[in-house]
Length: 97
Image 1 (tube, helix red, strand yellow):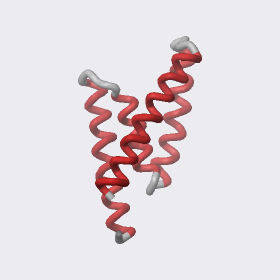
Image 2 (cartoon, rainbow, N blue to C red):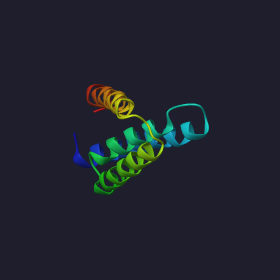
Image 3 (cartoon, one colour):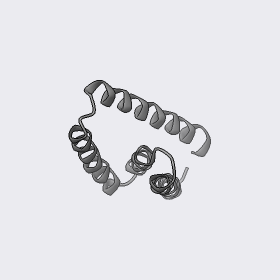
Image 4 (cartoon, rainbow, N blue to C red):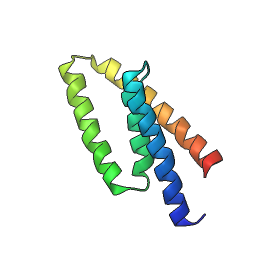
């Protein structure tokens, strides 16, 4: 696949997933998880998205600590988020690439 086309498709898919996450912040749904997934997709091709994802992880970690979420629950949420991200990556590489 042409690298320019791949970069464009990653930008479109990642952007749409991120926008879906923003909508899910207002509507019922796991908005932040979807936003992180969209940033993860974008980070595969764009350095700015990797920096934004790193900064967002730090903010989420501080928010979870201040919300006094138990460490076990944080790990469960991390595991679920990782699993969903991996499923989306498999779908991307199998069907969209």
